[in-house]
Amino acid sequence: MSKSLYISLFLFMATLISAQGISFFHGTWQEALDEAKKTDKVVFVDAYAKWCGPCKAMARNVFTQEEVGNYFNENFINLKLDMEEKDGISFGRKYPVSAFPTLFFLTPDGEMIKKSVGGKKAKDLIELGKNSLKGYDKSGQYVDQYEAGNRDFDLMLNYVSALNKVGKPSLKISNDYISSNPNISDDQKAKFLLAAITESDSKLFEELMPLKKKAKKHATEEEYEKKIETACMKTVAKAVEYEFEELLTEAIEKYKEADAGDHKKFAFEAKLHYNALMSNYEPWVDLSKSYLKKYGKKNPAIYKEQLSSLKKNFNYVDESTEYATTLAKGLIKYEDTTPNYMLYIQMLLSCDKGKEAIKVTKEAIKKASKRDENTKQLEQYLDYIQKEQLD
Image (tube, rainbow, N blue to C red):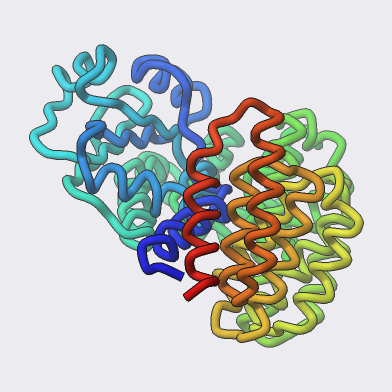
């Protein structure tokens, strides 16, 4: 295969299988601030220019990564602003930009927490985000009152919520408060516990279970599920850290008890996550196949998630390329788009299956033509692959 074709296809594959990246807000920067006020989140702004090379590189290679997306989607309102367009120019009057990209972290009131110039790798961007959240740490405003003995419900709720938002320890404070049998209603207790839980193998989680119906009144269905899932997955991570598989079983049982969603689906996801972190390739593949058989037809995006996990956790396993090819083939079975075909072509080529790649590329061209899509790129790939096969 020609070097230019291989690089082109490889970059395309990396972008496609990292489909769970940052979800950017669709609206003006003022509207983003309004949304941040509703959710009490920090606003992340990517101030870029269309012609900027590092901006394009971050958009293609960093913002698309699953790990980056998971962190930023959970913690920020994310916004991209072309600084040469109307809304970007308006933003630049208040927040001057002298180089691209410039990354901003703003409070919901528009105060700048942090500003960073230049492209970032995924690890560095996440670290920048964590440091920015620390700059929005509101827990300090409750410390004096707490240490003075104030145990007012609103104070405790706000204090523990603020600690958890920035990842500060809150377990002892929460446990001490609940153990003191405060004079609060079951409704208030449920609200506090939902805000306080950080892991499922805890007394706080157990205390929440009898009050789960009341807790659901204080969050949307999505928020409740996310809170429970995050707590349970934290326990799965502990199962790996302490090499104690019983914690994995406990996390799955607690998720089911919490009535947060499809517990069978969560069981698959928890086991997949555990085996990925434990580098157990064969058990992971067996679970992946069963997971896709049950859920892949209704949600083809799961194939991309499995490809992303395979690439992230088992890139060193020789057999992983074959399974990646199987996943790509399964993806086009349920979602036969041109980008998915191109991903499958790349996987066939990486397995030295040039003849099969030619056959699939021709099939992709026919289907794209029926959809009245531009087939030029596919035809160029076909030309390159055919020439490579002749060499």
